[in-house]
Length: 187
Image (cartoon, rainbow, N blue to C red):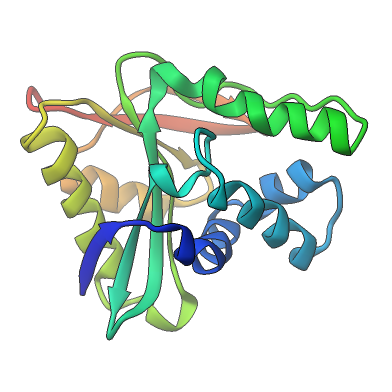
């Protein structure tokens, strides 16, 4: 398993992974309940720079030179700036307004999505990917790493807590109640 910064040529694989992690939100973003259109919408933004889903904010997990997972991580202070191109696109191209709650904030690097291809799940790849992010952001760069976990996903929460994340609050995202977890060197 190799984890590396994403490249534009990884866009299709990244979009497919992001879709796995955020299907409901992807449908809201593209304005349709069509998986292919939602993946295409995500791919469009993965290929571009300076937006929430840009390859610049992604890491890919590869096995035998194939992308088997992706992680979308960015500085929380930049959320509004990174969302602006997406919201502008929705308003201009789709002729509609779009709103979604802020899922992160200043003071943390936010793990927006981690997704492992279904045929690769259960092999410890997700835990290894999280450990990589912890090492990269918390250990090496002394940053706070944050994420949200759905209350209906106790297995993910158990993993996050086992790795050292702490519950720091509650947030609402796309109408769902989520627990906000963080990790830093103090924890």
